[in-house]
Figure 1 (cartoon, rainbow, N blue to C red):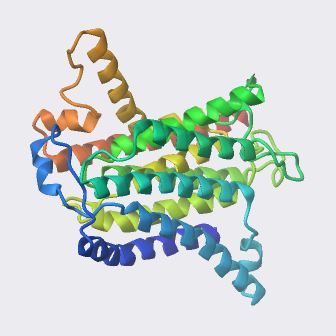
Figure 2: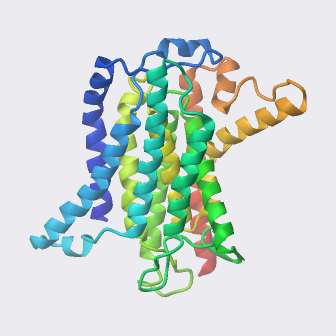
Figure 3: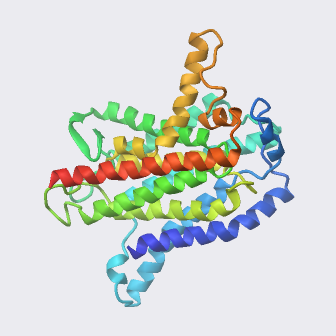
Length: 368
Protein backbone atom coordinates (compact mmCIF):
# COMPACT_ATOMS: atom_id res chain seq x y z
CA UNK A 1 0.00 0.00 0.00
CA UNK A 2 2.84 2.40 0.83
CA UNK A 3 4.31 1.72 -2.63
CA UNK A 4 1.08 2.93 -4.23
CA UNK A 5 0.80 6.05 -2.08
CA UNK A 6 4.44 6.97 -2.61
CA UNK A 7 4.13 6.71 -6.41
CA UNK A 8 1.07 8.96 -6.49
CA UNK A 9 2.56 11.53 -4.12
CA UNK A 10 5.91 11.77 -5.94
CA UNK A 11 4.22 12.14 -9.33
CA UNK A 12 1.77 14.75 -8.05
CA UNK A 13 4.51 16.90 -6.50
CA UNK A 14 6.55 16.82 -9.71
CA UNK A 15 3.68 18.02 -11.92
CA UNK A 16 2.41 20.49 -9.34
CA UNK A 17 5.83 22.13 -9.03
CA UNK A 18 7.52 21.27 -12.31
CA UNK A 19 4.73 22.35 -14.65
CA UNK A 20 5.30 26.02 -13.74
CA UNK A 21 8.90 25.73 -14.96
CA UNK A 22 7.81 23.84 -18.09
CA UNK A 23 5.26 26.56 -18.94
CA UNK A 24 7.93 29.25 -18.67
CA UNK A 25 10.31 27.25 -20.86
CA UNK A 26 7.69 26.69 -23.56
CA UNK A 27 6.62 30.33 -23.55
CA UNK A 28 10.20 31.51 -23.79
CA UNK A 29 10.66 29.40 -26.93
CA UNK A 30 7.18 30.20 -28.32
CA UNK A 31 6.08 26.56 -28.36
CA UNK A 32 2.36 27.23 -28.44
CA UNK A 33 -0.81 25.46 -29.59
CA UNK A 34 -2.38 26.09 -32.99
CA UNK A 35 -6.19 26.08 -33.01
CA UNK A 36 -8.30 24.59 -35.82
CA UNK A 37 -10.21 27.30 -37.69
CA UNK A 38 -13.39 25.24 -38.08
CA UNK A 39 -13.84 24.80 -34.33
CA UNK A 40 -15.76 26.98 -31.87
CA UNK A 41 -14.67 30.60 -32.23
CA UNK A 42 -14.27 30.89 -28.45
CA UNK A 43 -11.18 28.65 -28.75
CA UNK A 44 -9.26 31.20 -30.81
CA UNK A 45 -8.16 32.98 -27.62
CA UNK A 46 -6.22 29.81 -26.73
CA UNK A 47 -3.93 30.18 -29.71
CA UNK A 48 -0.33 30.23 -28.52
CA UNK A 49 -1.02 28.53 -25.17
CA UNK A 50 1.94 26.24 -24.38
CA UNK A 51 1.43 22.63 -25.42
CA UNK A 52 3.37 19.38 -24.89
CA UNK A 53 2.41 19.40 -21.21
CA UNK A 54 2.28 15.64 -21.49
CA UNK A 55 6.08 15.63 -21.36
CA UNK A 56 6.13 16.78 -17.73
CA UNK A 57 3.28 14.36 -16.94
CA UNK A 58 5.27 11.44 -18.39
CA UNK A 59 8.37 12.51 -16.48
CA UNK A 60 6.35 12.60 -13.27
CA UNK A 61 4.86 9.14 -13.93
CA UNK A 62 8.27 7.60 -14.57
CA UNK A 63 9.78 9.28 -11.50
CA UNK A 64 6.78 8.31 -9.37
CA UNK A 65 7.03 4.67 -10.38
CA UNK A 66 10.77 4.24 -10.02
CA UNK A 67 11.00 6.64 -7.09
CA UNK A 68 8.46 4.69 -5.03
CA UNK A 69 10.35 1.45 -5.64
CA UNK A 70 13.64 3.08 -4.71
CA UNK A 71 12.34 4.73 -1.53
CA UNK A 72 10.69 1.62 -0.18
CA UNK A 73 13.60 -0.62 -1.12
CA UNK A 74 16.03 1.70 0.68
CA UNK A 75 13.65 1.92 3.61
CA UNK A 76 13.43 -1.86 3.78
CA UNK A 77 17.22 -2.20 3.72
CA UNK A 78 17.47 0.36 6.49
CA UNK A 79 15.19 -1.83 8.59
CA UNK A 80 12.25 0.58 8.72
CA UNK A 81 9.28 -1.32 10.14
CA UNK A 82 6.75 -2.45 7.50
CA UNK A 83 8.82 -1.46 4.48
CA UNK A 84 10.53 -4.79 3.98
CA UNK A 85 7.25 -6.32 2.84
CA UNK A 86 6.24 -3.24 0.86
CA UNK A 87 9.46 -2.97 -1.11
CA UNK A 88 9.30 -5.15 -4.20
CA UNK A 89 11.35 -5.62 -7.36
CA UNK A 90 10.34 -4.05 -10.65
CA UNK A 91 7.97 -6.27 -12.62
CA UNK A 92 7.54 -6.99 -16.30
CA UNK A 93 3.89 -5.90 -16.21
CA UNK A 94 4.69 -2.54 -14.65
CA UNK A 95 7.54 -1.90 -17.08
CA UNK A 96 5.35 -2.88 -20.03
CA UNK A 97 2.62 -0.41 -19.06
CA UNK A 98 5.21 2.30 -18.49
CA UNK A 99 7.01 1.48 -21.75
CA UNK A 100 3.78 1.65 -23.78
CA UNK A 101 2.99 5.07 -22.35
CA UNK A 102 6.45 6.45 -23.00
CA UNK A 103 6.58 5.05 -26.55
CA UNK A 104 3.18 6.45 -27.53
CA UNK A 105 4.08 9.68 -25.75
CA UNK A 106 7.14 9.90 -28.02
CA UNK A 107 4.86 9.56 -31.07
CA UNK A 108 2.67 12.30 -29.64
CA UNK A 109 5.72 14.48 -29.00
CA UNK A 110 6.77 14.11 -32.64
CA UNK A 111 3.23 15.08 -33.66
CA UNK A 112 3.20 18.13 -31.37
CA UNK A 113 6.64 19.18 -32.60
CA UNK A 114 5.52 18.93 -36.24
CA UNK A 115 2.60 21.25 -35.46
CA UNK A 116 4.89 23.80 -33.83
CA UNK A 117 7.56 23.57 -36.50
CA UNK A 118 5.13 23.98 -39.40
CA UNK A 119 2.88 26.47 -37.57
CA UNK A 120 -0.35 24.57 -38.21
CA UNK A 121 -2.93 22.50 -36.29
CA UNK A 122 -2.05 19.30 -38.18
CA UNK A 123 1.02 17.34 -37.17
CA UNK A 124 2.29 13.98 -38.39
CA UNK A 125 0.54 12.38 -41.32
CA UNK A 126 -2.22 10.02 -40.20
CA UNK A 127 -0.55 7.04 -41.90
CA UNK A 128 2.77 7.76 -40.20
CA UNK A 129 1.09 7.88 -36.78
CA UNK A 130 -0.81 4.66 -37.49
CA UNK A 131 2.36 2.86 -38.57
CA UNK A 132 4.24 3.97 -35.45
CA UNK A 133 1.33 3.02 -33.20
CA UNK A 134 1.14 -0.39 -34.86
CA UNK A 135 4.87 -1.08 -34.41
CA UNK A 136 4.69 -0.08 -30.75
CA UNK A 137 1.53 -2.12 -30.24
CA UNK A 138 3.08 -5.20 -31.86
CA UNK A 139 6.10 -5.01 -29.57
CA UNK A 140 3.86 -4.64 -26.51
CA UNK A 141 1.57 -7.50 -27.58
CA UNK A 142 4.46 -9.89 -28.29
CA UNK A 143 6.12 -9.35 -24.92
CA UNK A 144 2.83 -9.32 -23.01
CA UNK A 145 1.72 -12.65 -24.48
CA UNK A 146 5.04 -14.37 -23.77
CA UNK A 147 7.55 -14.58 -20.90
CA UNK A 148 5.45 -16.30 -18.20
CA UNK A 149 6.44 -16.08 -14.54
CA UNK A 150 7.08 -19.07 -12.27
CA UNK A 151 3.33 -19.67 -12.00
CA UNK A 152 3.04 -19.77 -15.79
CA UNK A 153 1.13 -16.47 -16.03
CA UNK A 154 1.99 -14.02 -18.81
CA UNK A 155 1.33 -10.27 -18.45
CA UNK A 156 -1.56 -10.52 -20.95
CA UNK A 157 -3.64 -13.46 -22.08
CA UNK A 158 -4.99 -14.53 -25.48
CA UNK A 159 -8.55 -14.51 -24.11
CA UNK A 160 -11.06 -11.68 -24.33
CA UNK A 161 -11.85 -10.63 -20.78
CA UNK A 162 -14.75 -9.13 -18.89
CA UNK A 163 -14.00 -8.90 -15.19
CA UNK A 164 -11.52 -11.73 -15.79
CA UNK A 165 -10.59 -14.01 -18.71
CA UNK A 166 -13.59 -15.60 -20.42
CA UNK A 167 -12.65 -19.26 -20.97
CA UNK A 168 -14.76 -19.73 -24.10
CA UNK A 169 -13.35 -16.57 -25.71
CA UNK A 170 -9.80 -17.88 -26.09
CA UNK A 171 -8.17 -16.54 -29.25
CA UNK A 172 -5.27 -17.90 -31.32
CA UNK A 173 -2.12 -15.88 -30.72
CA UNK A 174 -2.26 -14.03 -34.05
CA UNK A 175 -5.86 -12.95 -33.40
CA UNK A 176 -5.04 -12.01 -29.79
CA UNK A 177 -2.31 -9.70 -31.11
CA UNK A 178 -4.80 -8.03 -33.45
CA UNK A 179 -7.24 -7.67 -30.54
CA UNK A 180 -4.56 -6.01 -28.39
CA UNK A 181 -3.60 -3.70 -31.26
CA UNK A 182 -7.25 -2.68 -31.61
CA UNK A 183 -7.55 -1.88 -27.89
CA UNK A 184 -4.38 0.23 -27.92
CA UNK A 185 -5.42 2.13 -31.05
CA UNK A 186 -8.98 2.64 -29.77
CA UNK A 187 -7.99 4.09 -26.41
CA UNK A 188 -5.00 6.13 -27.59
CA UNK A 189 -7.18 7.79 -30.24
CA UNK A 190 -10.15 8.05 -27.86
CA UNK A 191 -8.13 9.96 -25.26
CA UNK A 192 -6.60 12.05 -28.03
CA UNK A 193 -10.08 13.11 -29.16
CA UNK A 194 -11.20 13.76 -25.57
CA UNK A 195 -8.38 16.26 -25.08
CA UNK A 196 -10.21 19.21 -26.61
CA UNK A 197 -11.33 21.32 -23.64
CA UNK A 198 -9.46 22.70 -20.64
CA UNK A 199 -9.05 19.95 -18.08
CA UNK A 200 -11.49 17.53 -19.71
CA UNK A 201 -9.07 14.68 -20.38
CA UNK A 202 -6.90 15.42 -17.35
CA UNK A 203 -9.77 15.21 -14.88
CA UNK A 204 -11.60 12.27 -16.45
CA UNK A 205 -8.39 10.26 -16.93
CA UNK A 206 -7.38 10.90 -13.30
CA UNK A 207 -10.66 9.29 -12.19
CA UNK A 208 -10.21 6.34 -14.55
CA UNK A 209 -6.63 5.62 -13.43
CA UNK A 210 -7.57 6.06 -9.77
CA UNK A 211 -10.27 3.43 -10.33
CA UNK A 212 -7.68 1.06 -11.79
CA UNK A 213 -5.42 1.65 -8.83
CA UNK A 214 -8.24 0.47 -6.56
CA UNK A 215 -9.11 -2.42 -8.88
CA UNK A 216 -5.49 -3.58 -9.09
CA UNK A 217 -5.07 -3.40 -5.32
CA UNK A 218 -8.18 -5.54 -4.88
CA UNK A 219 -6.85 -8.07 -7.38
CA UNK A 220 -3.58 -8.23 -5.45
CA UNK A 221 -5.46 -8.76 -2.18
CA UNK A 222 -7.50 -11.55 -3.79
CA UNK A 223 -4.68 -12.98 -5.93
CA UNK A 224 -4.81 -16.76 -6.30
CA UNK A 225 -1.14 -17.09 -5.33
CA UNK A 226 -1.95 -15.33 -2.02
CA UNK A 227 -5.54 -16.36 -1.42
CA UNK A 228 -6.61 -19.54 -3.21
CA UNK A 229 -10.38 -19.20 -2.77
CA UNK A 230 -13.42 -18.91 -5.01
CA UNK A 231 -13.26 -15.71 -7.03
CA UNK A 232 -9.49 -15.25 -6.74
CA UNK A 233 -7.64 -13.58 -9.62
CA UNK A 234 -4.94 -15.17 -11.79
CA UNK A 235 -3.34 -11.86 -12.78
CA UNK A 236 0.33 -11.06 -13.22
CA UNK A 237 1.84 -8.37 -10.93
CA UNK A 238 -1.40 -6.58 -9.87
CA UNK A 239 0.28 -4.62 -7.07
CA UNK A 240 2.87 -3.15 -9.41
CA UNK A 241 0.15 -2.22 -11.88
CA UNK A 242 -1.55 -0.39 -9.01
CA UNK A 243 1.70 1.55 -8.53
CA UNK A 244 1.64 2.56 -12.21
CA UNK A 245 -2.03 3.60 -11.99
CA UNK A 246 -1.36 5.64 -8.85
CA UNK A 247 1.59 7.40 -10.48
CA UNK A 248 -0.56 8.37 -13.47
CA UNK A 249 -3.46 9.55 -11.30
CA UNK A 250 -1.14 11.56 -9.06
CA UNK A 251 0.61 13.18 -12.02
CA UNK A 252 -2.73 14.19 -13.53
CA UNK A 253 -4.04 15.67 -10.29
CA UNK A 254 -0.95 17.88 -10.04
CA UNK A 255 -1.16 18.82 -13.72
CA UNK A 256 -4.85 19.73 -13.43
CA UNK A 257 -3.84 22.70 -11.27
CA UNK A 258 -2.38 24.26 -14.42
CA UNK A 259 -4.63 22.64 -17.03
CA UNK A 260 -8.05 23.57 -15.59
CA UNK A 261 -9.94 26.46 -17.20
CA UNK A 262 -8.45 28.76 -18.28
CA UNK A 263 -5.64 26.35 -19.11
CA UNK A 264 -2.09 27.67 -18.86
CA UNK A 265 -0.79 24.60 -20.69
CA UNK A 266 -2.23 21.74 -22.75
CA UNK A 267 -1.41 18.04 -22.59
CA UNK A 268 -0.96 17.88 -26.35
CA UNK A 269 -0.68 14.60 -28.21
CA UNK A 270 2.35 13.84 -26.04
CA UNK A 271 0.05 13.39 -23.08
CA UNK A 272 -3.18 12.21 -24.69
CA UNK A 273 -1.65 9.33 -26.67
CA UNK A 274 0.38 8.25 -23.65
CA UNK A 275 -2.66 8.22 -21.38
CA UNK A 276 -4.64 6.16 -23.87
CA UNK A 277 -1.80 3.67 -24.09
CA UNK A 278 -1.56 3.43 -20.32
CA UNK A 279 -5.29 2.86 -19.95
CA UNK A 280 -5.23 0.19 -22.67
CA UNK A 281 -2.30 -1.56 -20.98
CA UNK A 282 -4.14 -1.71 -17.67
CA UNK A 283 -7.34 -3.10 -19.19
CA UNK A 284 -5.36 -5.76 -21.05
CA UNK A 285 -3.05 -6.87 -18.25
CA UNK A 286 -5.71 -6.85 -15.52
CA UNK A 287 -8.01 -9.00 -17.70
CA UNK A 288 -10.78 -6.37 -17.51
CA UNK A 289 -11.12 -5.33 -21.15
CA UNK A 290 -14.93 -5.14 -21.16
CA UNK A 291 -15.14 -3.49 -17.73
CA UNK A 292 -12.57 -1.01 -19.07
CA UNK A 293 -15.13 0.08 -21.67
CA UNK A 294 -17.40 1.17 -18.80
CA UNK A 295 -14.65 2.79 -16.71
CA UNK A 296 -13.35 4.63 -19.80
CA UNK A 297 -16.84 5.30 -21.19
CA UNK A 298 -16.13 8.97 -21.90
CA UNK A 299 -13.17 8.06 -24.14
CA UNK A 300 -15.38 5.53 -25.94
CA UNK A 301 -18.18 8.06 -26.48
CA UNK A 302 -15.79 10.71 -27.81
CA UNK A 303 -14.29 8.28 -30.34
CA UNK A 304 -17.71 6.87 -31.25
CA UNK A 305 -19.08 10.35 -31.94
CA UNK A 306 -16.38 10.93 -34.56
CA UNK A 307 -16.96 7.52 -36.17
CA UNK A 308 -20.72 8.11 -36.32
CA UNK A 309 -20.28 11.64 -37.65
CA UNK A 310 -18.02 10.53 -40.49
CA UNK A 311 -20.17 7.53 -41.33
CA UNK A 312 -23.42 9.53 -41.29
CA UNK A 313 -21.84 12.30 -43.37
CA UNK A 314 -20.78 9.84 -46.08
CA UNK A 315 -24.00 7.84 -46.01
CA UNK A 316 -26.30 10.85 -46.30
CA UNK A 317 -24.31 12.88 -48.80
CA UNK A 318 -23.13 15.63 -46.48
CA UNK A 319 -25.60 15.73 -43.57
CA UNK A 320 -24.26 15.86 -40.01
CA UNK A 321 -25.41 13.77 -37.06
CA UNK A 322 -23.80 16.16 -34.57
CA UNK A 323 -23.29 19.89 -34.89
CA UNK A 324 -19.59 19.11 -34.56
CA UNK A 325 -17.45 16.15 -33.49
CA UNK A 326 -15.94 15.10 -31.13
CA UNK A 327 -18.91 15.10 -28.75
CA UNK A 328 -17.74 17.91 -26.46
CA UNK A 329 -17.70 20.36 -29.38
CA UNK A 330 -21.32 19.42 -30.17
CA UNK A 331 -22.38 20.72 -26.76
CA UNK A 332 -20.32 23.86 -27.23
CA UNK A 333 -22.04 24.53 -30.56
CA UNK A 334 -25.37 24.14 -28.72
CA UNK A 335 -24.38 27.16 -26.63
CA UNK A 336 -23.02 25.51 -23.49
CA UNK A 337 -20.09 27.27 -21.85
CA UNK A 338 -16.81 25.38 -21.93
CA UNK A 339 -16.65 25.00 -18.15
CA UNK A 340 -20.21 23.65 -18.14
CA UNK A 341 -19.35 21.04 -20.76
CA UNK A 342 -16.24 19.96 -18.86
CA UNK A 343 -17.95 19.63 -15.48
CA UNK A 344 -20.92 17.74 -16.90
CA UNK A 345 -18.70 15.35 -18.83
CA UNK A 346 -16.62 14.88 -15.68
CA UNK A 347 -19.86 13.81 -14.00
CA UNK A 348 -20.50 11.34 -16.81
CA UNK A 349 -16.95 10.01 -16.43
CA UNK A 350 -17.31 9.73 -12.65
CA UNK A 351 -20.61 7.85 -12.88
CA UNK A 352 -19.10 5.51 -15.46
CA UNK A 353 -16.10 4.85 -13.21
CA UNK A 354 -18.37 3.98 -10.27
CA UNK A 355 -20.49 1.74 -12.51
CA UNK A 356 -17.38 -0.06 -13.77
CA UNK A 357 -16.09 -0.66 -10.24
CA UNK A 358 -19.56 -1.82 -9.24
CA UNK A 359 -19.61 -4.38 -12.06
CA UNK A 360 -16.15 -5.58 -11.12
CA UNK A 361 -16.97 -6.00 -7.44
CA UNK A 362 -20.39 -7.48 -8.19
CA UNK A 363 -18.81 -10.25 -10.25
CA UNK A 364 -16.49 -11.08 -7.34
CA UNK A 365 -19.43 -11.25 -4.92
CA UNK A 366 -21.32 -13.61 -7.24
CA UNK A 367 -18.22 -15.81 -7.53
CA UNK A 368 -18.17 -16.45 -3.77
